[in-house]
Length: 201
Image 1 (tube, rainbow, N blue to C red):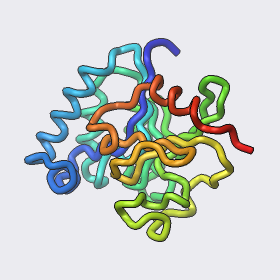
Image 2 (cartoon, rainbow, N blue to C red; image 1 turned 90 degrees about the vertical axis):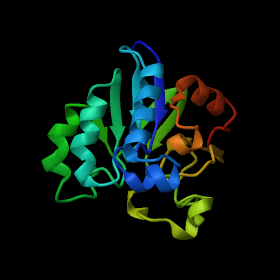
Image 3 (cartoon, one colour; image 1 turned 45 degrees about the vertical axis):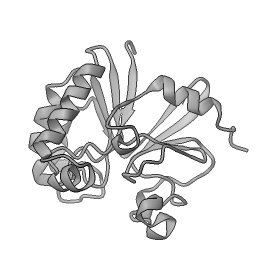
Image 4 (cartoon, rainbow, N blue to C red; image 1 turned 60 degrees about the vertical axis):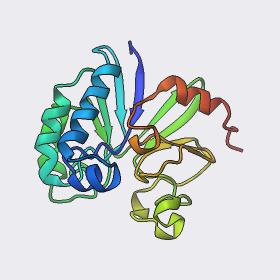
């Protein structure tokens, strides 16, 4: 793999509610244009971006979102989120929609395992169940989709989903746009964080 590596999640392209009510934009168009400008200022052709889910907010936005992402530089890998029709939780759309998503993303998976600086690292849209939906959305008591969350066996985890401002918590790192001022998270930042996370017992 050449070039730089970045991580992000919860793009919610074309999602008016997230753009205006949650992120303070005038419209989803303004939100998406800002996202595109950020990507073009950050990512070059030889770079790799891991998107940890929720590219869209609604299935009907998928064609628009894929067209937008398909025109952006870099090799893209998707760890699907609950809003993405290619997450295997969606019986009616998973197989039907997959070919179109694989035209934009080099891989699509419900979770991934990577190794950085000799450490095992998991990538999932969802945080561990103990974090639930995040403090701003009811915490562990409000955890949705428990059957699709990885078990917490002490392995460091990168995740999205919560839409919170929190970045680090325990042995997890939230890489969503909401936690990073609308920016992608460079792998160097992940490595720096990982160096301070104790190894699992």
